[in-house]
Length: 114
Length: 114
Image 1 (tube, chains in turn orange, cyan):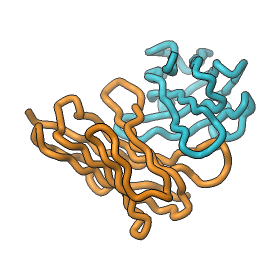
Image 2 (cartoon, chains in turn brown, cyan):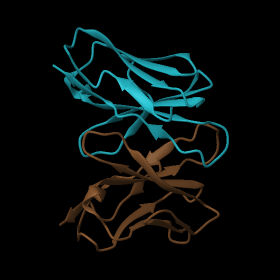
Image 3 (spheres, chains in turn red, orange):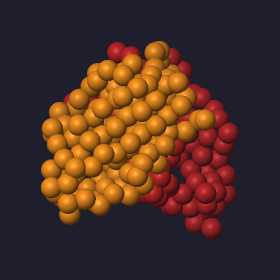
């Protein structure tokens, strides 16, 4: 089936720097995308989402960019903090149906160095 | 109440045991999900319930049996599991209906099969 993948399994950044986590998706029919943060021993936590009719969406310190031409999704975190250390998953919604079936990417571990 | 709760937090069972995992939400969500997550891997969808009816079964072995007694509760009954079934089992819920309603995850049950 279709899959969502990430370019970098681990990203190490200095505290205060900006972080960019990338995700490539393969299903051009996907219509909704979500970024989740998962800390050790916890369930995934929603960060931000974007619909396929948008190319950018901003939240508090986070921005998601969607490039449908190259099927690429990115999460930008401004002024990265130690509390941002976690695994980040992108997920795409399989288009059609009302059950919102998500396909998760492989995940990127973000390590913030103090 | 804006969270998904799961019990127990940890579970150790033998291959001949029968146990159940429980998930609860009181957000009025009408879609509920079970995922399995192995270490350093993304969540994998197992089952989806929509309006208390099973709508997706991702070819999960019959030793896993889901149940949705009402709109707030989701159970996963376990019987004759194998050691390779050891994983974090995540429950999620979603409002249902149209696009853009994200899935909220519980903290998970860490299952060890001996």
